[in-house]
Image (tube, rainbow, N blue to C red; front, side, top):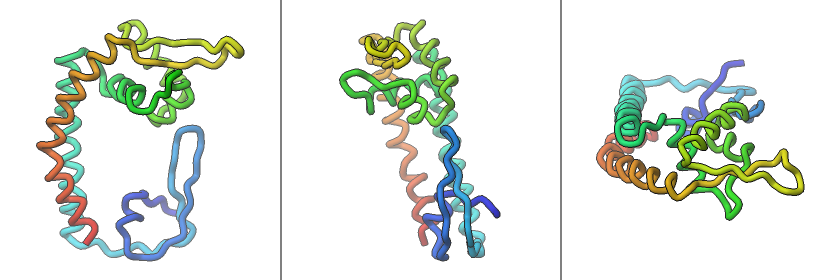
Length: 171
């Protein structure tokens, strides 16, 4: 059975039965029966335009993070997830790996690096030392604020191009 992207399915006018298959942190869509709509040249142009706009933003992001904070995009995403979704105790490693859509060991590696930079702190649960919560430090919060502001400004510049491409796909 062919795979179909969730975005393609959302924009499709054709009925289809599909379900999410989840393995660890990998989500894929499997189709039970799908009628693939014929794509028009403007559909290809919209898809390419959206990916081009995203690639320009991601290239900006990679350069800005390296220049301004010596962070990788994955480290930035971890800091963002902690700032946006952590409760009073922080996020567990499982929650962080889910937010980042990476395997547990990859999240642990990111946390190791961010902890060495003193941008995050790990706290072990007293009842069960296997459970670890991760929180931002004041230093991590400051660097995140700086680079997040740059990203918001760039998104404001680039979002019309992305939105236009997405709107063209909805027609």
